[in-house]
Length: 279
Image (tube, rainbow, N blue to C red; front, side):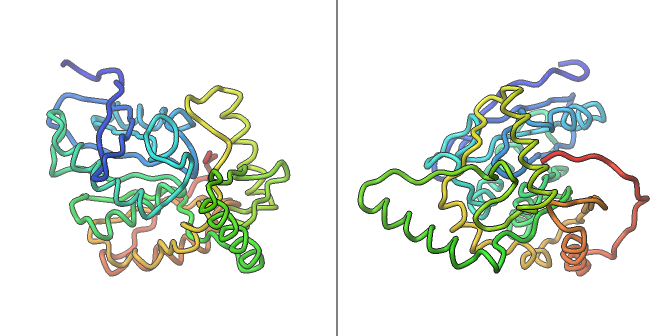
C-alpha cells in the first residue's frame, strides 16, 4: 500500500460473538490509530465520515464502527442502546485494531461524540491500554427527575409484556416536538428539536441501516448509567471538546465532569471558537 488508501469495510467480533461492522481508513504503517464511536442511535454514515477522512489525511488509521444493535452491526433486540455493554465492546474492538498490520499498537486513541464520548471514557476507565481519550460534546445526564417515575413504570410494563411473549416495545428517540419519555438530550427544547432535525436528515439521505426507533428498554440501561463517576479512573490523557452553545448536553455539566479527570493530568485550556455540531 502506498500513501493514503480509501476506506474499506471490515468486521470484528466481541467476546459474546456479536459482529461489529466498521469502516477502516488505512495509512502506511505501522502508524497511530483512532477508534471512533458515534452518537446516540446513530450509524457510521451520519456526519462523521469527513472527520475520519481528516484524521486519515493527517496520518492516522481510523476504525469507525456501528455500535451493537444499530446499523450493520449485529445484536438484538435492535436499537437497544446499552452504553455499559458498548464500553465492553470497545475493549474487544481495541484488541482487533491493535492487531492490524497498519497499526502501531502502542499508539491507539479513543474518540467519541456525545454518547460515544462517554462510552469511550467508560471503556478507558477499566481498560488502560488506550493512549488518549478525546471526548466531543459528551452527554452525562439522561433520566430527568420530573419524568423518572412515569418512564420507569413504562419500562417495567414492557418487561412484563415481553415475559408474556410479546416483542420489545419500540419508540422514536424524539417526538416531532423534540421530546422523549426521560427528558434526555435537551428534550422539549432547542436540543431536542436539533436532534429531530438531525434524525430527519439522516432518513432523507438514506443512511444505511439507520432506524429512527429505539427499544424502550434503552431507558432501563440509561437509568443505571453514570459515566461521570468513572472519569477519575481513566489513566490516559483526556481531551474534552465542549461546545459553548450546546443545547443537548449542558456545557456546565461537561466542564464539571472534566474536572474529575484532573487526577490524571492538570487541565489545559485551548483557544475557543464557535463551531457547528451534529449528533
